[in-house]
Image 1 (cartoon, helix red, strand yellow):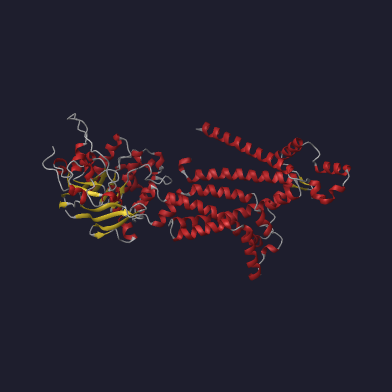
Image 2: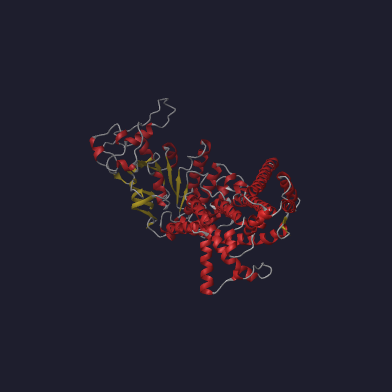
Length: 318
Length: 320
């Protein structure tokens, strides 16, 4: 399989006081591959995703790094080139469906707008088909409704219909189920998975929930305090985690079978800029050594199986 | 649903009527509290030479010999039944005065608002594209300037420059109604509209700027950019429409002020509008003129408020 997107040495920081937010992130997504980024709030996973489409919020800027999509660097590209990629070849669905749609524009028009922006087929029939595909019960009435007339789950379906309309090569999903009820989460999860398979597209799914990611993706990227802690296939991550943080994440998953006490990782994640020259996990790690506090562990290993730890976990966890 | 609307409507009607009643009482009282009355304003220093009998006769002529409450009720009864009273110095009905002056003020307010809202909104957008940057700096300077420079300075400047340099003085002629001589009317309206338009543009610009800055940070704007929509469309379709409500509110307020008459500007450009009518009335203690004119202005304000509400509904589907 060929590479679809590769993020190289991505470093992000605050524009004003240059506080480090994302530190030297590298990963690759192959064509048709499904990749998950897992991490806590503030670990830099959302910023990493937003920077792919050049949608960084105000006050955050890209210090260095390349984003190569289909062989072309797009983070330094001109506006027209970026606009051509956005919504057309890379689409994104966002965390909060309640605020991600324009409240003053009818749903049909918002979807048509995505097509028009790329001179694609904006026929009503085409849009209705897209709405039907994501399980909207009555696409015709949805087409001429405003977002506030729908629930969060329905709005997220609309977002998915909109982002899939032009059959993108890559769908970025930034915690699209976090703001939804648990029962709805499951439906959206299945929907995205089904659509991904039908359209043979790549998926970058961002979540703080390792168990959600495990069901959807081939490869997991674990982020911690602005850095990648570990990359591996789902099986490798679950069966043989190398980074103590990954092991902690897996340990804290609820396992009903074993009826054991829920394990949590003590402490809180640090701000990335406070741990720029050491291992970010040092203060919460059971295996910490002097080295962890004085130098920064680099990612070691090959592209699809690597970790950043001086004292990796030995042996299988389960 | 219907009941909700009708109860909301009823409470609105009640609050409007209370406000208007309060204003009428206030104006009535203030007019009597300021020193002097119709007699002193007509006779000036000579008032002291009048005999008590003459004063009594004059008071009766001017209708100020009755108890205050009766005076008020008489005026109120007249106003409600459409009789706005008379300007006793000339004997002209206030209805006639207002029929002549209100259109002038309305036309001026319309032009000034169109200029002010267009200019203010565009300046606001221009500033908001670069908060804290160079564009914002120039926009803010404009806003401060337009707020700080008094209208008489700007008016005088315009009159002086156009009259001296270009020998152009449309306001030197007697005021022309639009249906008499449209071209002259528009020429006469141009300068005062610009002066008032700039005054309106300043608050509109500030409102538009902050509303724009707030809206362009919203998630749906990011969605639009993420869809590949171009920058101009994002700005004028997604951001502008969602920033409209505060701009409409500010426009309504400014338009209401303008309907109260721009005394100084009307004076400088010799336009016979509401401002002048009320000012004249105060100077001559024309009680009926002032009371009725102020009430008409107040009612216009209420009407504008209602129209603003309707515009909200038109713009925002969530409050339909």
